[in-house]
Image (cartoon, rainbow, N blue to C red; front, side, top):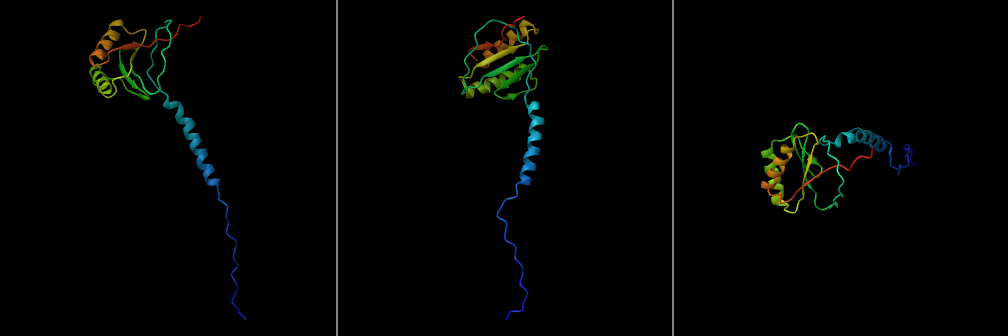
Length: 145
């Protein structure tokens, strides 16, 4: 007879422990809930109101938007990319580069209603020098007061 003590073997667990994964997912959920409002940013521009039909949105062709805030600062917005204020010559160079790559890109100007008229006109002229054959203006619909 074999007198050696038998080792008791436990059956192996075939179930996955998902508790650590749930903890990680909850932490990620909290992080995304906190950071999501910070990701939506843009230039604070008070657009003039006018009655005009909205333009059709082309999902394949992201527009190039140049904003002018009430202080006369220029901002370049391409797709989801928002920028810090830039001098006009840098805006012209970047728009020129974009239009060289995508000649069919639409170029729009978002001008604050409190900025001087000449600032927006100089910007539109500079954008035409950069290669934008047509420059559109963005407005808000009229308010129902």
